[in-house]
Each structure stands twice: as structure tokens, then as C-alpha cells.
Length: 125
Image (cartoon, rainbow, N blue to C red):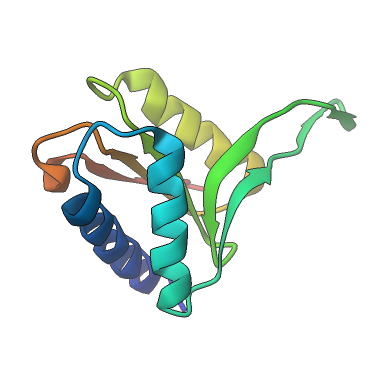
């Protein structure tokens, strides 16, 4: 499945989760619910995937983790914050760069309108 098809399925899962659970819960709740929704659809998704960081060809032992990795092609970064800040977008772009993955989705569940709180970011390899 290509990134655009996955993006469509991910958005559907996000809307279903938001409509069932509403805003303001912990990020971990939304992460588990989206993972469940995607797996129900037959989409391979993993949570808390470690991100290796290399500096001068040395692997640094750090604790970076992706919230969700979908089909090894799309990163989902989940937030439940008052408002999305520029740093949230930068973190996602850095994850894309570190992993070489092309597409990332940033979503904030602490909102009254989920459709305005889903952001696509592309890694211009």
C-alpha cells in the first residue's frame, strides 16, 4: 500500500477514535486506540518503535520512540495538548529524517475540531 492510501486509512482511524473517545485524554489512550483501529483494518502498525540515532557513524544510545509506525512507511506523532507548537512539527520532521521515512502525520486530540488538528509532513529526501 502506498503512502497516500495509508494516509487515508490513518485519517479514518483518527476520526473514528476521536468520535468515540472525544478530546482531552492521555496520548497513550489515543495511541492504543489508533493501533487497534488500524490493525482491525488489516494495516500493520507498531507502537513505541525505537529510533536509532547515529552521530559520526556511532550509534547513540538514546530513548527516542515513534508513537506509531504504519507499514514501515508512515510515522504518526500523537499529541493531546492545548495547541500544536512549531516544535511539534520540527520533531516529526526530525523523526522522518532520522528514519528515512517519507510521510508523517501529526495529530492533536485535545481539540474541538479534529479535522483542523491533523497535519501531514513530507520528508523531502
